[in-house]
Amino acid sequence: MNTRQNRDETIKGSSGWLKGIRLSEINVIAWLGVPYASPPVDQLRWKAPREVEPWTGILPVRDFKNGCIQMIQGLPFGSEDCLYLNIWRPDHAESDLPVFVFLHGGGNVNGSGRDFQGGQLAYETNSIVITVNYRLGAMGFYRHPALRTGDPLDDSGNYGLLDIIHALKWVQTNIIDFGGNPKNVTLAGQSAGARNALAAYLSPLSEGLFHKIYAMSGGLTTVTSEQGEAKANDILASLLMKTGVTNTFEEAFGWISTQSAASISDYLRGQPAARFAEIIGDTGLRMDAFPHLFEDGTVIPKKGFEELMHRHPSCIPVILGSTASEFSGFALADPRFFHLQQGSLSDDEEQKKLYELAVQYGNELYAAFNVEQVAEKLISLIPELPIYAYRFGWGLQDGVIDPVIRFLIGAPHGADIPFYTGDFSNVMQNHPVGVISERNDPGRKMLSSLMRSYLRRFLYTGDPNGEELPVWQRWTPGFRSNDILYLDANEEQAMVQCIPKLIFNHIISRLDEDDRLTDEQRSWLQMHLFAGRFFWKD
Image 1 (cartoon, rainbow, N blue to C red):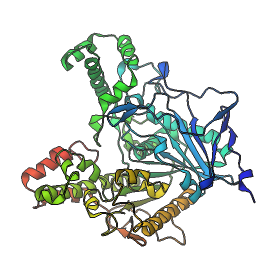
Image 2 (image 1 turned 90 degrees about the vertical axis):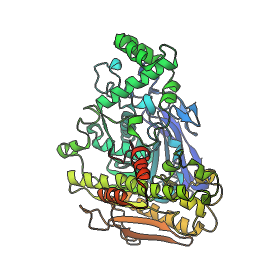
Image 3 (image 1 turned 135 degrees about the vertical axis):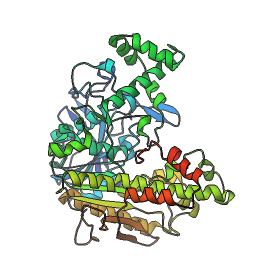
Image 4 (image 1 turned 60 degrees about the vertical axis):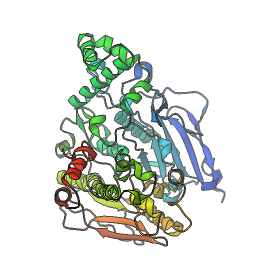
């Protein structure tokens, strides 16, 4: 049977005809750069997303469109016109396929939907994979009193999250035309994307728009509206100095105090989006550097995730994942350790030992924040919630990757993504030798196949377990059971086992009592390296 004749790449959506592209080498059809909302430019900046204007004729959607405005290697990149999504599906005639909507990471200041290449995953899981661009930085999360209009959505400041919810509504309206099942949508994401997915679960505006969650290295993070407004004023003050209106912060705040809301709004709307991105820069897992996901009372309840207890959201299956070396890349970026990348690790044994301990404790704290703390919070609020948890450890086995890279990076934040997508290009770009090799190819491919098999089962049934798969235990309250599925591989084959949960307070106690650290080193870890990070309670 010629499957190419069974599914047309030209589809009629709610706003007009779309012509995708057939990717014959992977047996997939893709629709790339599909507009799901009007461009949030000019008077639509800092407004909730609006519906797409219908078009006439056939719109080619055969390549990725603009990413949202952000900084890449110190330079502004992207556009405010960025609300596009990407769709991949297997090239056959089947319909009623499960839908996997993936939100990219990047701290809500970087990234785009093109970061997660969904074609191979769509084919291997026989599902529809969708990735979403959503507004980033101050274009996506900015709450300033001078911008208030009286509309609670426009005034919320949560524009990036509203984009995500709008994209989910687009999926509900259109996915049948692509062969998808609107009643079987899994909302997934990695890092900030996972935090956004969990925030969407918290939002009353997303009720019924998705039916499962797959959160990779995320966490529960919201901030008060007051924190958002204070940071918005800080950003405004920096803009005033950057544009020469004032010379100091003191002068800037004086200027702000004397201006009307209209004049401040006009000033803010007159600034190029790139200037906001330049001011925010890299946040490094620190919410105080760029607060977002505001508890505005409309998009996100005032009490954050505590409100789940009173809202009674849908009891939907959840998978929570983390990597075993979540913090290594962030630690290595610190000036105290950056030189370790430049030469031999034997040059400075004291610094090497400190780095090893910093990474050990940082990895555990961040992994626990991403999985154990989320699972315990959710199940305490919704006891019947089906939760499954994994920890990804590929790269930590002796001999699998280069020993220097193993020591410095291990299984870092985001390392699990290529095992779902099959796209290792970024890994090879960052580590051209020593990580991806012919020697570790058999075990790596077996692990990738296993992870996709779990995901496929979860997409179809809400339970990752299957007869042919190692048992994945459902999360139980408390910390006495081994409910974490550890995903790893040696050079030849996948290795799966159940491991104990991490206990945040126990990690802190071990850190406080570790005699391998001097008092100065311990203080530096706590007051400098960990301070302000999502996972650290100051």
